[in-house]
Length: 325
Ligand code: FBP
Image (cartoon, rainbow, N blue to C red; front, top):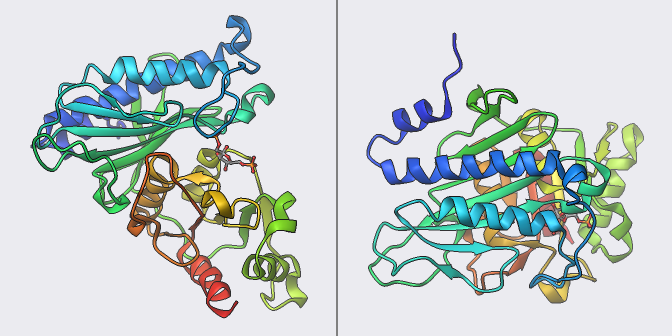
């Protein structure tokens, strides 16, 4: 059977929300352009680092800024898009006076950009919420209020993976025609796993719960888990979440002694919320260690949060380590 195009999927699924179809199509168009810029970066002189810092105090890569401009420029075309909240821009960008039913787009234009110079997978993460009342300029709403969230991954194949709340679907971009087609329908995360992803160079900062969890995993068959675990770390959340959606696993960027003062490492509105929403729609779980990420009340646009997500049973086991510690 022919794989459905993104447009056909969207028009058949969102029968009463043409404006959301337009916005998701614009996001897909932006991601196609970003994929091209990433692929051609060595020819265009777009690798390396700029001298400018973003609001997080991180040095920006040329492609961080290019990807941000592409999303802004392409999505500003969407008739109901009222505001943009980007990792790379300190203030909210208001495009129009907000009206009930307009959209706010939260995004990380190029996640995992430390991987660019080594030619590994990076991606764009996005989340969409609705304005609840005319004139309301409140962009700080919990992840449960998202109406669509997902990411594009720029790997060997460019893919767009998103959820409208129920189910997660993956669309691959054909490199010749540029068409996105539904190649990975209804992704489901296996409940159990023997694979975890954590930056172990931070072990010196970990709290007791994470120390014990990782020690028990690496103890193998003779340890309390009674089996061998595999470990992965790509320093690109998009790539980690994509792997988990494909074959299960857990990803941990927990609160630790070093990042505690900032509230964690990853950003709530455009990294943790969209990925938590996707993981849950595919049958997995996403927690801060204590609470469901989707219930975390945001207090600022660039807020950070601890993130632990993936296969449901394994996340429950990690939560037990926290309860016991
Ligand atoms: P950027 O959005 O600035 O690229 O940072 C996010 C991120 O790259 C995640 O994708 C990844 O999980 C994490 O930072 C990697 O952190 P570390 O540098 O500790 O490996």
